[in-house]
Image (cartoon, rainbow, N blue to C red; front, side):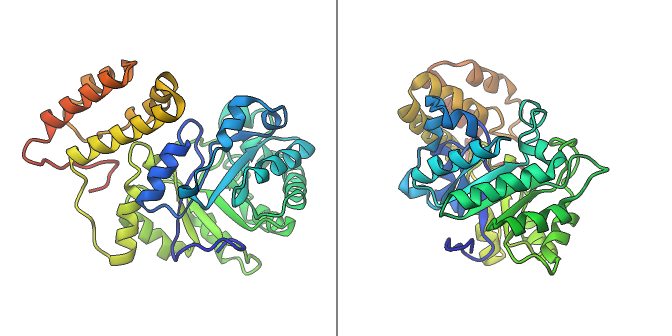
Length: 335
């Protein structure tokens, strides 16, 4: 539970990801079993300037609740004002982005850049908690680099600001997304007797078995899944089933996979229009159908296509070429 937000035991969360965690993708993840999710990153500066493209990120569908709006920025007043705007969008919580490692954000002092200015991070957290009535959570990393893994101390200080939960990605900013996520410090934060808010672990969870192992080993209150869900929203169904039963679901078939991608494409196009809908879906098409032999030429065709009809025709070819006899295959390491 995060304040008044009730979640089931061993909850699974969808990570906020720019150009990925749009409303359609979130809805698909929710249907697959995600318990809590977050919007794409929302710039506090752009939100208070009323930038239309940024405001569109606040769109929330009832069927995807509970949901948090994630804000990033480095100005205390702007973050507090943006939080009140986000609260008016009728979300369940506000999440503070203290972990994005992308250069254009972190090097300007926002996102993971705040790992180099902890006093400012704490000022932002305090101001946002004070500005809104709904729960405020935060997402961060282990530290700026290998020599400054200060998350155990930072977590205590963030808790003291009044945040309701903390998600920790098991890498430093310097690592970006390379190497292996280190969950040992996440476990230290969770097992720190001073900590009494939920601690959520994030990083490299790409299978049901690993999710269960990490719940058991580190005792976290939830697991957040990011990259492993791209092109594969049903990862939540597979993990949830294993957590609940100890059994693995059969791997998804090529036919099922094709129909899932078609559904996401059509719903995204209905929401954003054909051109923008295709651009949004390409991020998922780029990583989908892993494990199929000699798939690269078809993938390139899909990524170059600029019409729904053409993409669906290619998907039908995928179905005919790879699914004869109900062939099943491994997706994102699952199955």
